[in-house]
Image (cartoon, rainbow, N blue to C red; front, side):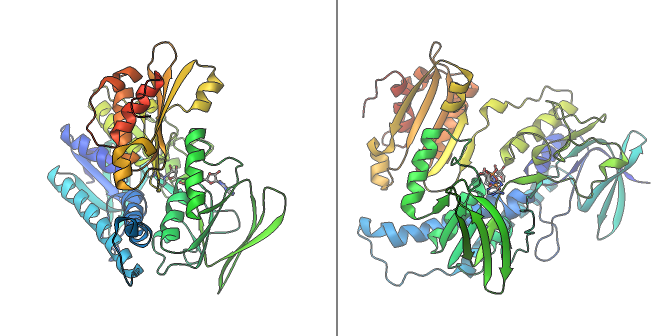
Length: 475
Ligand code: NAI
């Protein structure tokens, strides 16, 4: 007889593993099925985020930033380094170790929470007595039955038509993290989050990087003023970003890759590079799920159709994270996972889509929450804006990193914070104050009245809030 579970989670990424833990905390008998394999063929829990996404990219961003600091910024501090070199092999090995620590951490959490872990690919078989039968195809094949199913199968990199990923010359986010030596010339298609982060890693290590972007505007989803400031910084660093291009044929040979494109002026150009990273978005992953077997509905993009509560068209089948609508962000998936587990337990799980923070881990970092100025203008909403530059912040000066600013947007009448946008040092951490403020429906004045430690970068947040009322103290 098949093993029976209250909840079966399909996918062990940040959405799935967090859903499994929360469900277990709530007293359910939980299984999680995940097929990711480590280099030795064993399980590697954590999904794209842990294995080939958020975590390894941050490890390489840190290593490459150290290198750039040593090469370009140490002399300002009176520190001379002779014979500075990069050992890419060691850098990648460190990154792999960071990944492994995270894999092992999730395995430990599963044991601690008594979650049964299956290593293999899960697919729907049929509705079964009291739930759904799921086949697990791993080293051995097993059949399990769950009363509730949470699908958290994530997403895959979108390939450019006619240029499939070979992970040697044409790289996805996966291959981009495994380049064994610094390419002399690196081309990227798509100046979104992955394009900017991976472009930054390899530029810092010495590659000549060109990013080709189809849209005429840079980072269209980001507040225009912030995107402009970020672009200025990237230009200064030598990260070449060409906007408004139309990519044509991509060819590979022993020497590398060539990308034919038409630039914004309508000229035909061929870009030669050693490697090409294609970062043009991701597609929901339902490969091999056998959704048809039970009649699980997908939308026209291939995402699983869900309502606001992550309920699919089938009773007791839920879907969360990248495989459903909404931003493809690990922390959005986590929140949905917690909310679904709580709904299964009869509680009122809730995800506030208006306060999901975004972070791009470049240097300067870019972070935001809430609405942008262009969105408020389009809505015709009356608002007040306040900005404060890091140039006027003592801690930023001491750090030697004064690029960027903090910007507040608040309702013109009520002063409620509608959006906070940042570009500059460590804003990935600073943004959480803004998220908390918005979650509690704070006004800009609330932040302006709160004592912030001196000297700290967070004073720029307080000052930008003061700027909404045109009364900055340090600028
Ligand atoms: P993205 O959606 O951030 O950016 C894709 C870019 O490619 C866009 O600017 C788009 O206009 C451009 N593009 C699309 N088709 C094109 C074409 N044919 N030619 C030229 N340009 C084209 O997607 P990305 O960077 O691939 O990232 C995928 C997902 O992973 C995103 O949803 C992102 O949020 C997530 N992610 C999040 C990170 C973070 O939170 N720090 C880090 C990395 C990825």
